[in-house]
Image 1: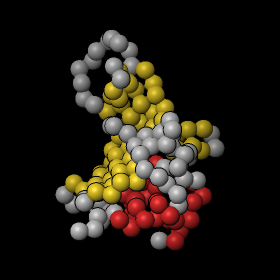
Image 2: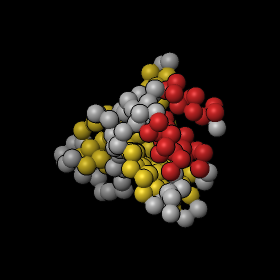
Image 3: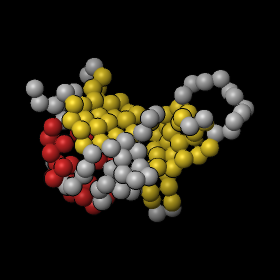
Image 4: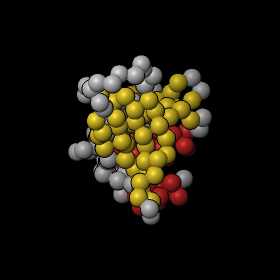
Length: 141
């Protein structure tokens, strides 16, 4: 049985993206140096796109999920994480704009307030695809 994301895997491999792993009901992409891993799969009727260990988005349509995967591979987007004891407790997806970086979406863990140790900030950004390549792919669909 072919994965529902096999066509996406073929497109990424044709663009020279390495680290693509196709699974029966999903796909994962290993991060570039200093970047974050990306995964796409299903949860019931929804597609779930995951960036790094924490940030995720549930979307109803496949096209939006594929677009999220593609933009996550570019340097035009980054993941800013608050990290405590080596694990992210909050992740923010940001987009580059004329005025700098702008927050798009947050995902966080619900936990009791712990004053120590203070979380550190980790910024991760992929460079596997050029933003222009993603625009070209999306325009052709």
